[in-house]
Length: 338
Image (cartoon, rainbow, N blue to C red; front, side):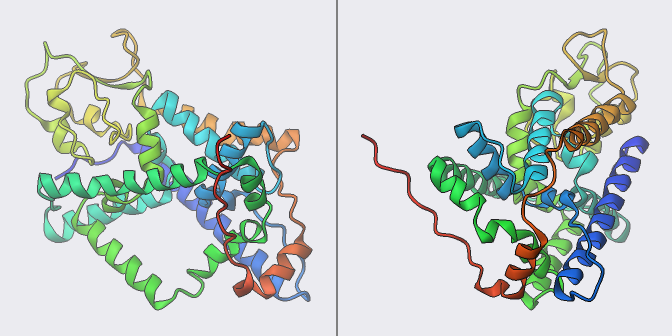
């Protein structure tokens, strides 16, 4: 049985999950106000952009190529960039401390443990093959978006499709189609049987954060001289990392959940922190890093005026009324090299 999660992490997970639910309810009211002009107007919650990583990635690539921070989805650009920065400096904690999908995955495999008294581990060859899927998906998005010219990126960002892709996402689940129900049911069942099935095998966002986290100065570190080799750390790891065989855990699968450190029976044998053995970062300290990055930094940009989308409600209402006609714009190939 996996050791119980670090309490402060669980509270942070539940807090961000509750915030996501409230944002979803607010967005639902916004869409209702678009459909019925008799209702009082409801402002669009800009935090919805956090659920649109592909759009945000496009905005980031456009910014890197032109130096222009677009005003179509500024909140998405800020939240996405801050999440990447956290991964680069403090590992992939977003996945196990913030992401609501990660939280659902965790509850799902814990349910599997209670119902079946275990979770299933796929054979190593199959596990390796399936884990490559998220990196292949990531490579696809990086190549397609990275090769787009600045003009093509700008045209996509300002296109009707990108302006209302949040509504298109909403309509996948309200009400859900038969295909959506089948996919969600299958993924849910697999998540009960296999720990973090979606996160481990299919999430390109997690793959990106994992790769960025490899050079992070923070990591789980083991003192071999006091380690007994009991492997309790490895058993506690939800990502199947053999922590007891490594001096420093650099795996892109590590989500900084601190479960392995909490499971170690020998004081100071495992710690999470920088390379200096005199320093460690407690779960509370890590939680403060997450909260500072994902709450205070966006609040600062909101105060500075870079947060609200420039898409007026009238444009949302016009496109929402004929949303089936709003299609993804064709991806223009890059111009030929001179």
